[in-house]
Length: 279
Length: 99
Image 1 (cartoon, rainbow over the protein chains, first blue to last red):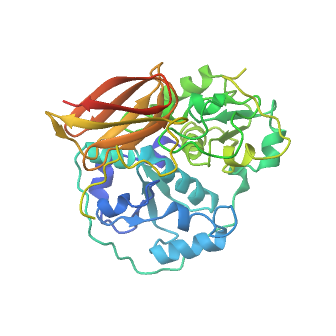
Image 2 (image 1 turned 180 degrees about the vertical axis):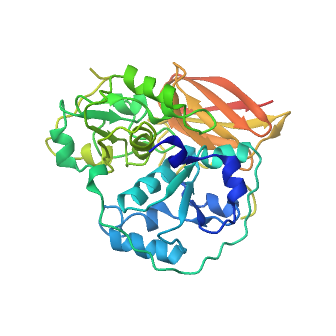
């Protein structure tokens, strides 16, 4: 993979709105953002109700993912361009799921909604209609998804990258600062994890930093490139952003997203937890 | 809906201001509210902590911790920032001018 395979610019996106074979999908943390205006022709994906299992705590399985894309009118041969608010957190989470279920051509709009809005580009409230198609999803590619036992086994063995803010990492707060802080699980981080906040990989306008800056960022923070890596955050969406950086932009071979993340790990009985700013 | 939500007032009903450090404010340009600005919360070292989109009335809110915070706003009307000292739990209010 390289940057050109993974990211599209706002200029490119604007020129390709309405092009056959290119589908724009908006995925936001605030699931009402789409209603206030979206890219012309873009289709909304709701991360809470459409990318997660409605009953179990899990992402949708392959069959549900296929049914979702069929309903949204996304074909297996379509180029999918994902974008969203909050610096593409949830668009990156969706990107990771598209890769997990083997979609051939998926990209992220660099900078997401923020760059698009700051550029003053067109948003519309017009409804998007796409005819239903038949989408076929592959089995989940578990080489990019980590589960809890694997994470515990990775302590002191693999690169564990905690991409939350320094205060969440140290245990000072339990959730990002735009969310209420009352939660039941223990604060802290997985022992041996290094703290490289996702935000360090992004510019102020939400675009990703250059490959050179990104390579230096993770190298300086102590990420060993030859070692396998597991990224985590609170619920797996910010770590998807970092997964995109490490696996897709920098091309590291073995990088997994632990989507259970701190809300799972910090609630497990008996697992080791480290407090403070790290080793 | 008869008015834009005023985030500065509408705290979640179970917010405990004896325990939580809530930072609220409004983004202004030439004295007028700037709706839809991107407001970034930076900690005492300048490290990014969180980001929200201001409401139509320019209001924003963060749940943080005691400390010195920088609030930086990006908008079509320009960018700007202000420092807020929130040394204890409670409600802390500020304004961010963009130009």
